[in-house]
Amino acid sequence: MTQTQPVRQSFNILAVGQGGRLQYEAVLLAASLRRFNPDFAGTLFIAEPQPGPRWREDPRITSTAVRGMLEALGAVILPFETAVFGSDYPYGNKIEALGALPDAPFLFLDTDTLIVGSFDEVRFDFARPSASMRREGTWPQIELYGPGYAQIWRSLYDRFGLDFASSLDLTQPDEYWQRYLYFNAGWFFHRSPREFGARFLDFATQVAADRPAELALQEMHPWLDQIVLPLVVHSFGGGRPGPDLGGLDGGVTCHYRTLPLLYARESDHVVKVLEEVAAPNQIKRILKDHEPFRKMVYQGKGAQVRALFDRTDLPRREQMIRNAIKREGLWFR
Image 1 (cartoon, helix red, strand yellow):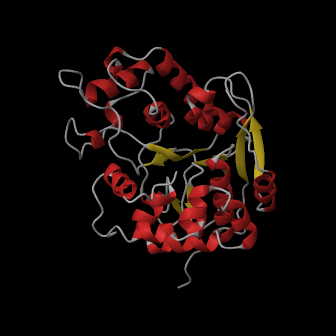
Image 2: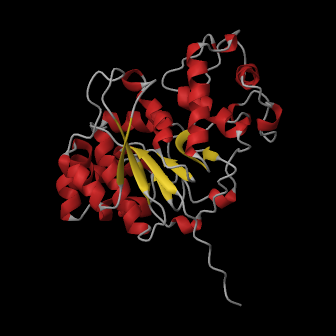
Image 3: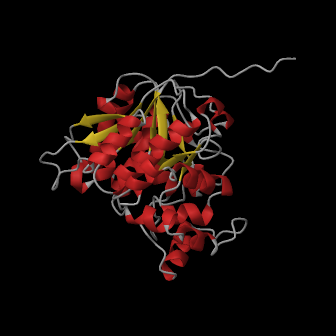
């Protein structure tokens, strides 16, 4: 019997690129996409915030070499205006950039993402959005005598007229953080960036300006995008990712966050991909201008980090990994 080949899906990818580390990460993202998806059917858009009153400094990509390499790798640099967030909340870039995309199915990826496999292995249902479950219970932080998880999350669903009960994972115990819909905003997707972005921006600005009373003791920065993202996904009929999306945060994408964390905890395959993609001279000339790439990849500090940890028995919390790396003087961000 002949095995059926997967039908290739056409969609765009959005990441945010600007001056500083994001511009270098964007080069690695684009190069790894080209390496594993040479006939990618969509377009990689690197959204670039433009200077304006919301920015204290010019946020644009500063390196002409980075610009040239992104374009050589097939990426399109997409300028967008920042009307709401800017310097005070740069995570809002991912929200505001959505409105500049062509209105076609999209996958948002944080720039600190490495492509390690083919998107043919991922079966998206763009009508049912989802997002990354590679997260810890970072929000909310429950205060003594304050409201619990259910009260806090229900207040947000009620604010926007959403059904709270249907968002729950009933296999998890009451008042345990994983019972409640909570994502990492490192990737998410939908059929329409315009619709998704408009609702994301609406919900985020409402929560930032007038939070429910149950959130009075909660820190909103930098968690605002991750507080609102579950509400937006749920409002469009989406939810937790199923097995068809297993390649995201798996065999297709790796949201590494920082290079020290990549070397500490990711698989040998991910490390091999990183070093192979970063090896060509035209890529190396650009990435070595950024200290974390220069130290970790090209000067061998990454191997020193890797030797500190047993990947089969990693510390339970990410902060413990970070602290161990910092004690050795090997933390570069």
